[in-house]
Length: 249
Image 1: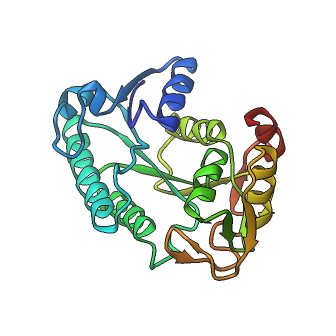
Image 2 (image 1 turned 90 degrees about the vertical axis):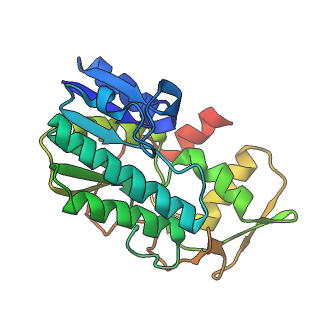
């Protein structure tokens, strides 16, 4: 099949393109750098010509609430309209486990809007919700840093490797549309504050993690299970955190 990967030059997208190619498909990386802009529509019709599947793993360049909402709304509407014209039979989008549980989080609400547009759209779809990536742990620590301390809530956290996210996306892309949501998560649950502290120690980072039940996660206060799937609802990935951490350190 010809499968167009929107955001196909990024962390997840580039790996998805490679995995689809390994499966024998014609995987096309579509991004502004390759001449495809889902916000303006530039290059979209040409990229989708002959495509059976579109995988959308693109991310907003801004995380400001109104900007991210505009990005996912405009991009998704343009994509779905172009796909309908091109005869695309499967639209897949990557989303976030717990996306419907943080109503005060602008980014999560924008992703929820994206999901709603897809469900209401004309193209059969699959939505893959993933937990946070191991690769984001350092950035999460940075955003939670005040001076030489990192304030993190003692809630459950079940991250996974970007490689495993890409594998789940690729496998779903080549299957029949789910017309619904599937969830993927890491194989282990941790306490969020303990995992951040463990990573910083492995990286010889001198910052101290302070456990704070009211610490905010990108602006939102977290409940115990805000960032993990319901028990038994997610496919579990293979890569364990300690193995990834050893390699990263």
